[in-house]
Image (cartoon, rainbow, N blue to C red; front, side):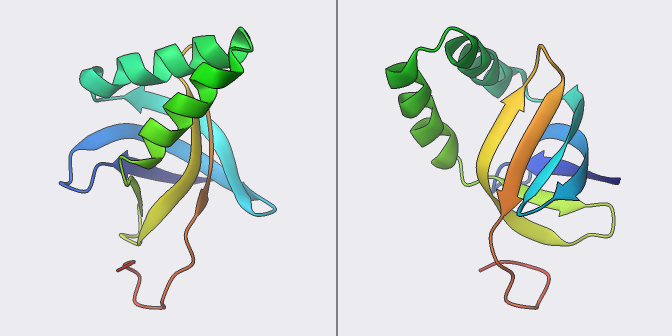
Length: 107
């Protein structure tokens, strides 16, 4: 498993996670949700998913994608996060990473 942080573009840490590859995704557990402002967003997202409120899930997916989140691994590799699904109540997380340009940091 790889430990890392999901961060906002300004460097503010949203969550600390531990993930492992599963095909094109990284799956794992939420260790700590650090950003209380956005924690409510992900709790609302989880409730919408569990309640099958598809229109709300779609709106929240777009909002989350608009955050332009980054994954920073313990090794310091920075990659853009795609399709983040973070569930605070279940303590689980899944996402994919944007393709790297080889520099270790996405443009």
